[in-house]
Image (cartoon, rainbow, N blue to C red):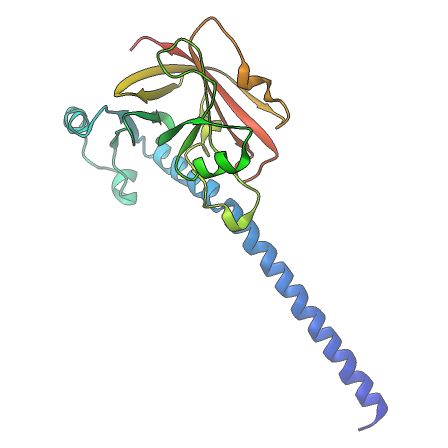
Length: 239
């Protein structure tokens, strides 16, 4: 084999290897981005389709209450509901009547893990695998103080599905939207009054004080990252 031919084959092999490595890196990057943002995008699509179909969520205190409320609000499927097989009305029964959060506008329903130490990363990450965290030292519903609840997102693609996705749609909440907390079998209603996007270092909202019972909901923002924090503030209203 001539030296020239050997050089050409060597160059071809180098190009082939570089191209293979380059394609692998591109595909890996696409996979990581897709996996990281799969759940947020899935939730966005669900919310969009349900909004177009005028789906309604109603809050029920128990399974029996849910049956009663659904009978009162019984509506036949039609139009987009029938095409996409979307129930026109769905009842949300708290995951755990002892402590849960239910937000009808976004179809959110999750158990709350009480007294989570926000300064202990291992403890709060473990709690957030089971539900929404309630910050240790903040109030409980009915006590007249500040209740701080948080869920988690992540920028690590390999564990994006590990944490509860219930707060991925918090950004859809607007002033006067309803938030429900169930605590020891009793329902407490709150109304959104404000929302903010802050830096992770702005932890002063954890100890925020007012003269009314209120709840703060926190999640990472944008969904699928840990760049910022989205805070939703709501005050208690009469049942």
